[in-house]
Image 1 (cartoon, rainbow, N blue to C red):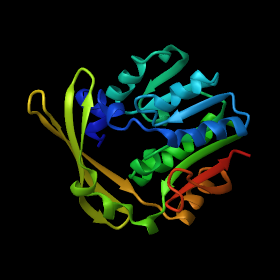
Image 2: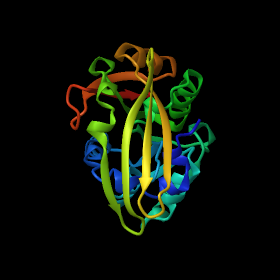
Image 3: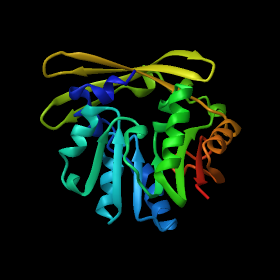
Length: 241
């Protein structure tokens, strides 16, 4: 199921305001330049923050996401006409020859179903040109990030322009093997509405991801550390060689 924070229009509209610091994307912009990419496919583009950042720097960008409400937010932003947007998962894309395919933030972990994950990797391979690269990030399970997902450490109040104050917090729901489920709660001061969004992430081991990339036809080039979360995330760089 799609997370409500991406699929519910009222939550999609405030998503960027609740997560305004996207300095984590700087490393991906730098890699696009490092690899000499011209066309970039952003899988799980959400509200389009990274896709529009790339387009603003002159890249030819394609963004795809199954959450229609989030893509609608992206389409309404300045410069959105410079990106080709698609609703759906990566399997809906027309033939592409992308130099770089990206899955930033929680995108890779959010594809928790094994069949959907393998299908996404195969679609990413099909969308890449020979010599193109795939870059994705995923948390190191050894860091046990979910142990810090609680209301006491996460509760904030954000003044959202045109909306008013929104109180939000996260709470852990369940840990079942590699699957971690948590719930975000959003309380709107303007009308007293309280909305929730449940998410499940799959925490994959480093060797597991490497094997799945190989099964999809990619060659693993390297595994980097995430600059914004050193020691807590893997950044996989693979190629269609």
